[in-house]
Figure (cartoon, helix red, strand yellow):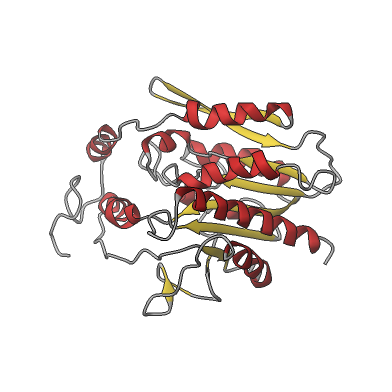
Length: 308
């Protein structure tokens, strides 16, 4: 795209400095309430789950408790089933799908497994419907020890003692039209790179791990979700977001190498969901339902194969 400005902040070809990051931050207004929409819903779960803060974030005058929900009567001899949502705060069904699962199905595996759910990893970004945190960092490229992203560092610390106990980890995401209109252009501008437009897939898909693929696990999740919403098809190149299709609705990335959330633990079964909320063929409730169907199918498969 040459020297043409494709984003309103920064100079094409030059990475952002302090001034550009401050200009970006100044544009990020609060659009919804983490306390009212998320923390209050988590608080209502205290009657039947253990709810606890695993850290907090202070951004300026704003304070965000980082909340997790786990089985009451946690047993060290049971495997752990892990659900994370809201790593990217703008991906709404990740947060509300996790909450809906807890409200309606959170006790399905009592006595067989320990459940741990972190519904909203990035509360500041949830309120601003954004992908990044206030430092213009993507938490989902920063899940590593001593991470520069506070959201990522807190979750890594929470899960460190459970790295080998987690049997299944499902991380709930969305791919939206704003990926192409805002977030990928912002990323290119921030890093001083050219922006190459891509294509947003219409439908649900999963991301498997290149290094530790589990195709039958992914297939089981896709089959369950297909009963709730449509599965994304490959583009003209046979790809979804630039990655080759492994099977209907499944691509793979080097999850641990990229410091993605689904690679924090050594879970045998791990996947990342991607729901498309901007589809004319899907409603917000359908997106939440798709996330719940994915969670339930992932857990059922993992527990059926726990000894295999």
